[in-house]
Length: 309
Image (cartoon, rainbow, N blue to C red; front, side, top):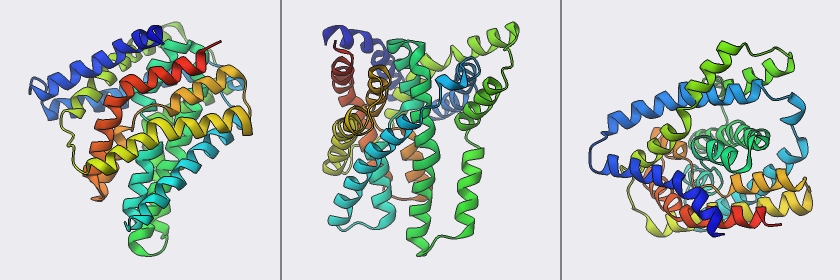
């Protein structure tokens, strides 16, 4: 446990450094926004494409993994939605809360950290988790928010979902990388070096950007944010573990990576969606802040559990 904590500590230390930079105004909100854009569109996309292009397609896709992760995630999504409805909130707000309960920071935090902790064999499972989150649940929240407001699902909403997926550089990097791999195309040396150098900026840059963005997060709606943080850090990995270990059993390594990915704190893009639609941005902001701070302790516990002999 102590060894795992010490191995994850440098990642959270960089987040802490970013938080200090943002809090002290050494790094402005505008600078954070541009750093995040660079990581999102360039560095992280280069890392994902290189990972996918250099992996045999057979090592990436695992149908049972997708089903198991979907089952565990959907179960917690349902719990968070039910609790929201019991409190009398509307459909769009319930959708934001459910998104906080299940969507972790797999892209900016999980991909670089879990690959370094578990090795390059973790790339395939982590990318499948990331793809499932982006394709299924990012589309679902757009449907629920727009459908909840309009009372029905419009064709324009489906068009919006499709364009959102096409414009997401992480989705496109995964698709292009897997296509490159499926065609058995070699990655030329200079191109691979270019992607390696550019992708090398993803890990420190993404962690720093997470911390700097947290400096602007508020701690309003504390009780709701605390509940959503518990859902994300405890319930989500617990039900995903039930799915991938018992209901749809995977090999031990893949199961460990998927459970570890499910234990990650709430993703920053949930706040972006909440702010864009004007739906509960403060509770999403607080959930990201609380879950990220708490994950310094909870993530090592989960990783220590799944990696114990």
